[in-house]
Amino acid sequence: MKQSQLSLKGLEVFRVAAQSGSVQITADRTGLSISTVSHHLRNLETQLGVDLLDHARRPMVVTAEGLIFLRYVEEALGLLDKAQVEVRAAAPHGLNQLRFAMIEDFENDIGPEITRMLAKALPHCRFTHHTRVSHEILDLLRNRDLDLGIATQPQFALPGVEEIPLLRDPFVLAVPATQSRSAEDIITGQSGLPFLRYSRSQIIGGMVEAQLTRLRLKLDTTFELDSTASIMALIAQGDGWAITTPSNYVRAKRFHGQVRLLPFPRKEFARTVSVFIAEAQAEGIARLISAAMRSLMSTHAIGPAIEAYPWLKDRFRLIPDEVVTPKS
Image 1 (cartoon, helix red, strand yellow):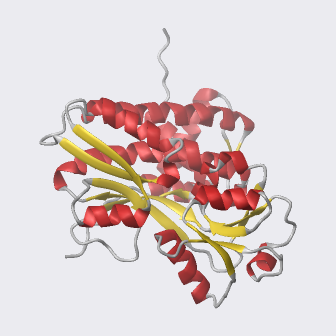
Image 2 (cartoon, one colour; image 1 turned 180 degrees about the horizontal axis):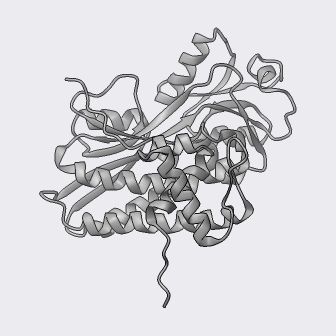
Image 3 (cartoon, helix red, strand yellow; image 1 turned 180 degrees about the vertical axis):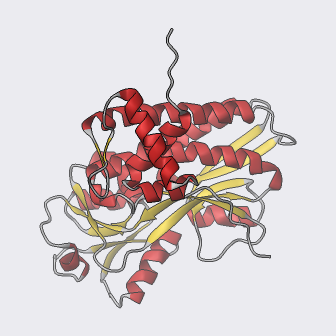
């Protein structure tokens, strides 16, 4: 059997370059120099004998051959991430219990994958997995009722809880597919559609409210809802519009034909989805969960969203890996 000469680092660089469209951004995210990034991309294209990226365009665009190759690269790197979790977490030192929670935003595709992975990787560990909204997860972490959590970053850091930021999830408008008004018309109340608001008790709802206040936009509220599924269902029926995020849209697959996304027309804002670590002994497994989440988010959330809405490129993206240590 002929062994592949493709470089793993080259594949990783290509995936980031395909997502970002920029050699500079790829260098920043991978920690490599611009010349090293270019070297990896040239070598990969030379070995395959095809152009994977249109280097003459700014931002760079993935070619037809590159799109085919990218699907397999994401699948292969995802399998490697899973392998790392299963091998390196098979016997984490001192970890005999793991209490883990994830926001419901990822419960459809990503949540089951992470649960299966952890159950297989930790056969001798007592493992509990909860699905909650972000502020409930953060309360449980604060009270040390959880070891790990994946949630929306709060306004203020949690004392004694470390954070690994994963995803920049920008706020966008979700409108009925039949709606022809501009985003500016919609946000200023000229569409005739009611504004469907996330509950202000949730972090995501509070962030939307704060931005509207900063922009001095006062929107009448007919509905205030906790559930993204309910919001998307109402939009799909033509009964309103919402300020939401691409990850929430991707999750509502059955409504994609009836719901359309528009860029937020005023000053852009975004939420950050992070892994939070409340117990020091869970840091090793948190790193592995972080790697797996990045791969799964790229495959199940970022890729489909950018394919449907190319203007999300560079707005909806993974965040370079680093731990944020809380201030004492």
